[in-house]
Amino acid sequence: MEIKNYSSSTSDFILLGLSSNTQLQKPLFAIFLIIYLVTLVGNVLIILAIHSDSRLHTPMYFFLSNLSCMDICFTTDIVPKMLVSFLSETKSISYVGCLIQMYFFMAFGNTDSYLLASMAIDRLVAIWNPFHYDMVMNPQRCLLMLLGSCTISHVHSMLHVLLISRLSFCASHVIKHFFCDTQPVLKLSCSDTSSNQIVLMTESLAVIATPFLCVLFSYLRIIITVLRIPSAAGKWKTFSTCGSHLTVVVLFYGSIIYVYFRPLSMYSVVKDRVATLMYTVVTPMLNPFIYSLKNKDMKMGMRKLRFRIHS
Image (cartoon, rainbow, N blue to C red):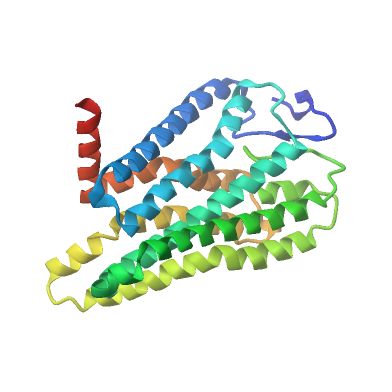
């Protein structure tokens, strides 16, 4: 499909999507519709299982239920528009719509990041200082951690959107991506984007790197604590409680670091689209499976939920 075939007003952007091949549009629509529905159902089941089982009313599962909620919001911000684009000829998104999508993408994505850090801290306290766990991870502190995660993420998103709203787009309005991400939109601007890039590489580094460093620090302390356990069985049993969380962390942060922590000149359309798909679409879909298959408490919670639904 040629770019010249797209029609848009001067206030619109064109989202090229994953492929310009017209024969792939309907198959891609079917694939991503299934992924989106699986993501919704899986994460809703996680939330229902946690809220319906009193044994799961702990800090770890409090953060997990909120992570599932954020994953639903995160994918809903991106995938429905992508699905419409697969079946549409214009593939346009308004300038305001693009900024709104970018705002919520960053807000929900960063909240995910802080929730993963909160879960890492929870595991650290549970393993390193179990006798003071209830005192340290009390409900008030968990709620403050959640509110802090949301506040920082939304302020961060607002700053980026305000900076981008000051730019001019006087040439191409074609975004070579499947949603309004920061890097491909900056590529289109005919204004000086140096201030945006400085903010992207400094303020973003602080906002995104802080939870990532919390995760690294937590797992270093967890590993040190586990290594002090004399028996191999004890080491495995203790560290296995972190398996699900660690898997999600690797998938989420691995793709984010690859996409965002490089200069704008190194941006690659094809490679970055694949990496972005990992944390925007694939990881939210996999999270319920990772936690329900690798976690005994979640397996029990799911069985109880299934029993209540059928009874």
